[in-house]
Length: 137
Ligand code: ZN
Image 1 (cartoon, protein in one colour):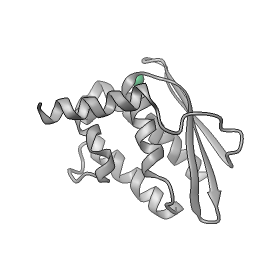
Image 2 (cartoon, rainbow, N blue to C red):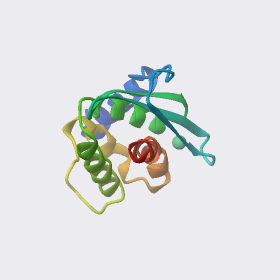
Image 3 (cartoon, protein in one colour):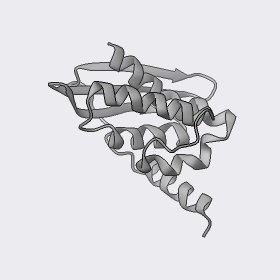
Protein backbone atom coordinates (compact mmCIF):
# COMPACT_ATOMS: atom_id res chain seq x y z
CA UNK A 1 0.00 0.00 0.00
CA UNK A 2 1.48 3.35 -0.99
CA UNK A 3 1.52 6.46 1.16
CA UNK A 4 -0.98 8.09 -1.22
CA UNK A 5 -3.38 5.17 -0.78
CA UNK A 6 -3.09 5.42 2.99
CA UNK A 7 -3.80 9.16 2.86
CA UNK A 8 -6.81 8.59 0.63
CA UNK A 9 -8.18 5.99 3.04
CA UNK A 10 -7.90 8.48 5.91
CA UNK A 11 -9.66 11.18 3.86
CA UNK A 12 -12.41 8.81 2.80
CA UNK A 13 -12.98 7.77 6.41
CA UNK A 14 -13.39 11.41 7.44
CA UNK A 15 -15.75 11.96 4.51
CA UNK A 16 -17.91 8.95 5.36
CA UNK A 17 -17.82 9.51 9.11
CA UNK A 18 -17.27 13.23 9.65
CA UNK A 19 -16.12 14.20 13.16
CA UNK A 20 -17.88 17.06 14.88
CA UNK A 21 -20.52 17.56 12.23
CA UNK A 22 -23.81 18.71 13.64
CA UNK A 23 -25.85 21.36 15.36
CA UNK A 24 -24.21 24.78 15.73
CA UNK A 25 -26.91 26.39 17.87
CA UNK A 26 -24.74 26.52 21.02
CA UNK A 27 -21.76 28.07 19.22
CA UNK A 28 -20.61 31.61 20.01
CA UNK A 29 -19.81 32.40 16.41
CA UNK A 30 -20.72 30.79 13.10
CA UNK A 31 -19.25 31.60 9.71
CA UNK A 32 -20.23 30.23 6.34
CA UNK A 33 -18.17 29.37 3.32
CA UNK A 34 -19.30 28.31 -0.11
CA UNK A 35 -17.64 27.17 -3.26
CA UNK A 36 -20.40 27.30 -5.89
CA UNK A 37 -18.35 25.68 -8.64
CA UNK A 38 -18.09 22.50 -6.64
CA UNK A 39 -21.32 22.77 -4.63
CA UNK A 40 -19.55 23.00 -1.28
CA UNK A 41 -21.54 24.95 1.30
CA UNK A 42 -20.56 24.68 4.94
CA UNK A 43 -20.79 26.57 8.20
CA UNK A 44 -18.14 26.44 10.90
CA UNK A 45 -19.10 27.17 14.49
CA UNK A 46 -16.85 27.93 17.46
CA UNK A 47 -17.56 27.87 21.16
CA UNK A 48 -15.06 29.54 23.46
CA UNK A 49 -14.24 28.81 27.06
CA UNK A 50 -12.36 31.91 28.12
CA UNK A 51 -9.52 32.24 25.64
CA UNK A 52 -9.52 28.55 24.70
CA UNK A 53 -11.54 27.00 21.93
CA UNK A 54 -13.85 24.54 23.64
CA UNK A 55 -15.68 23.22 20.59
CA UNK A 56 -15.49 23.47 16.85
CA UNK A 57 -18.18 21.93 14.71
CA UNK A 58 -19.34 22.17 11.14
CA UNK A 59 -22.53 21.76 9.27
CA UNK A 60 -23.49 21.55 5.61
CA UNK A 61 -22.52 19.61 2.56
CA UNK A 62 -19.58 19.38 0.27
CA UNK A 63 -17.39 17.15 -1.81
CA UNK A 64 -15.12 14.56 -0.23
CA UNK A 65 -12.15 16.94 0.06
CA UNK A 66 -14.25 19.71 1.60
CA UNK A 67 -15.89 17.45 4.19
CA UNK A 68 -12.72 15.52 5.04
CA UNK A 69 -10.77 18.75 5.52
CA UNK A 70 -13.49 20.21 7.77
CA UNK A 71 -13.69 17.01 9.81
CA UNK A 72 -9.92 16.93 10.33
CA UNK A 73 -9.87 20.64 11.13
CA UNK A 74 -12.44 20.29 13.92
CA UNK A 75 -10.23 17.68 15.58
CA UNK A 76 -6.97 19.55 15.38
CA UNK A 77 -8.19 22.95 16.61
CA UNK A 78 -9.65 21.92 19.99
CA UNK A 79 -8.15 23.46 23.14
CA UNK A 80 -6.07 26.02 21.31
CA UNK A 81 -6.18 29.73 21.93
CA UNK A 82 -6.97 32.44 19.42
CA UNK A 83 -3.36 33.27 18.61
CA UNK A 84 -2.36 29.63 18.12
CA UNK A 85 -5.39 29.13 15.89
CA UNK A 86 -4.59 32.15 13.74
CA UNK A 87 -1.05 30.79 13.31
CA UNK A 88 -2.37 27.35 12.41
CA UNK A 89 -4.77 28.74 9.79
CA UNK A 90 -1.96 30.73 8.20
CA UNK A 91 0.36 27.71 8.26
CA UNK A 92 -2.27 25.55 6.55
CA UNK A 93 -2.91 28.16 3.87
CA UNK A 94 0.81 28.56 3.18
CA UNK A 95 1.23 24.81 3.07
CA UNK A 96 -1.65 24.25 0.66
CA UNK A 97 -0.66 27.11 -1.60
CA UNK A 98 2.87 25.76 -1.72
CA UNK A 99 4.70 28.60 0.00
CA UNK A 100 5.74 26.38 2.85
CA UNK A 101 6.74 22.76 2.85
CA UNK A 102 6.52 21.96 6.56
CA UNK A 103 3.37 20.13 7.59
CA UNK A 104 1.41 22.48 9.93
CA UNK A 105 0.31 19.66 12.24
CA UNK A 106 0.93 15.90 12.14
CA UNK A 107 -2.83 15.28 12.36
CA UNK A 108 -3.28 16.90 8.95
CA UNK A 109 -0.79 14.67 7.15
CA UNK A 110 -3.40 12.93 4.97
CA UNK A 111 -4.26 16.25 3.30
CA UNK A 112 -0.88 15.86 1.60
CA UNK A 113 -2.72 13.67 -0.92
CA UNK A 114 -4.75 16.60 -2.25
CA UNK A 115 -2.85 19.76 -1.41
CA UNK A 116 -0.99 19.84 -4.72
CA UNK A 117 -4.12 19.51 -6.83
CA UNK A 118 -4.92 23.11 -7.68
CA UNK A 119 -8.52 22.22 -8.58
CA UNK A 120 -9.11 20.91 -5.05
CA UNK A 121 -7.36 23.65 -3.08
CA UNK A 122 -10.53 25.73 -2.76
CA UNK A 123 -12.39 22.69 -1.43
CA UNK A 124 -9.60 21.97 1.03
CA UNK A 125 -9.32 25.56 2.26
CA UNK A 126 -13.02 26.42 2.48
CA UNK A 127 -13.40 25.38 6.12
CA UNK A 128 -10.10 27.05 7.05
CA UNK A 129 -11.25 30.34 5.53
CA UNK A 130 -14.51 30.08 7.50
CA UNK A 131 -12.46 29.43 10.63
CA UNK A 132 -10.33 32.49 9.93
CA UNK A 133 -13.49 34.59 9.50
CA UNK A 134 -14.84 33.20 12.77
CA UNK A 135 -11.60 34.06 14.59
CA UNK A 136 -11.85 37.65 13.37
CA UNK A 137 -15.46 37.93 14.56
ZN1 ZN B 1 -15.40 20.72 -3.31
